[in-house]
Length: 145
Length: 146
Image (tube, rainbow over all chains, first blue to last red; front, top):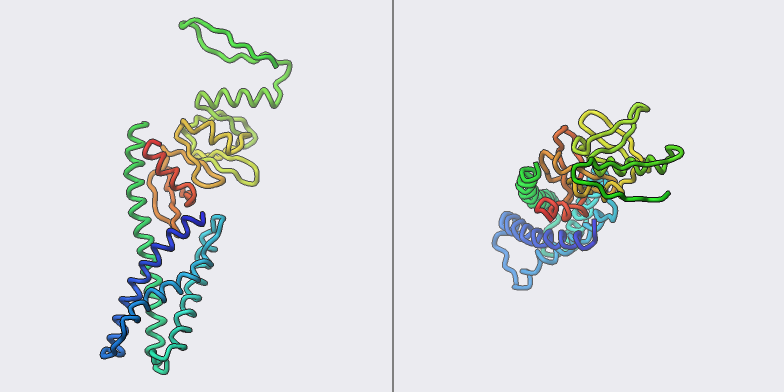
């Protein structure tokens, strides 16, 4: 994949992750510490987390076309690295109670759900592109038959 | 080899005549080229030489320096290089969809998304071929008539 296309795709992913992380923090925060109050600076937290999650995506970058197996392997490695980054942030943060196992499991689970959702949204975007190509293909074949 | 072009009348049949001492590889190449311009490609299958109609070819693939033509039923080896066929068959709705592959756009049943921004072309033969990301833009342009 060309680096430019990879970066454009990752920019889309970044904005998706920012939104999904905001939703995940709001939901898990409400469940575990609903009365907590934050400063405006904390509004940047989902963006910072999304930016950190973007770093492991570079393991999926390759100039040559990857086979399906190689791609799945790199995606799995990417997920593991994102889990490691997010858990590292959680364990080094004083605001997150990592003594409670349910908190740690919720963070790990949220990362997995966000990863699956982000990939699903990208697939839906490709699916819409494929639908448009199929319409153009049908017209093309009709004209040239 | 000298090349002569002889203008003929409208009622006369157009022919390409090769006068040679022996049918060498170079002569075969010229024959193949002329036939490809007429919508035919030469290919070998089961040690026999065939003339295959371009419209019957689903896709063309280069594997280990050899080029193969895939029709619905058979696979033929051809002497052409993939880049030569790309040039030759552009006007016959063939398009490169990955580094080693050309596909006949008229033989695509549908296009499906694959992982990581790639797409899969499902052919009328039931076979599936991968469309690399780098060639998606060209495919979209070709389908729009570009």
